[in-house]
Amino acid sequence: MRILIACEYSGVVRDAFIAKGHDAMSCDLLPTDAPGPHYQGDVFDVIGGGWDMMIAHPPCTHLAVSGAMHFAAKRASGVQQEALAFVQRLLDAPIPRIVLENPVSIISSHIRKPTQIIHPWMFGHTEQKTTCLWLKGIAHLVPTNNVKAQMLLLPKNQRERLHYLPPSADRWKLRSTTYQGIADAMAAQWG
Image (cartoon, rainbow, N blue to C red):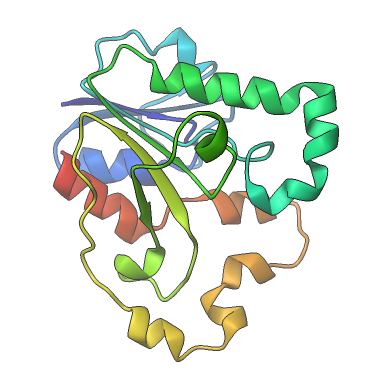
């Protein structure tokens, strides 16, 4: 299959699909962190390239409810409406199978509710991070290694490690990178 991994600079999901024998390419405005097929630029430059599937990770900066205290300013400046329009364009892309991934966000109230909600602990990571999936033409992702019981034994700052990261230049990157267990499940089940 030909798979476009939109808004991914890390290469984690792209490389999981390549490992399963698929023709996968990541695309982001940023350069890729890992060598491999990557288009650096606007996803809409390549979205009509005859893809069988797209997995999109649009930026959550102006959408995630964790930043709700800034929503009034984001609406006033127009950046929130632009972010929602970007998400809608991704969901409307001429690709038969689409997965859109984002944290709990206003996508649910402005576009539609997510098809599925997953957590890293469902895929072998002892961490809690609510991740919403909007699916088109594709089945739900089935958990592969539920470690919730082990995760709950950890202190809150360990099981919610990403929420407790101190400010740093790369905090946003650490918080947005897809967990390997989730990427592997996507490639095994959707490829």
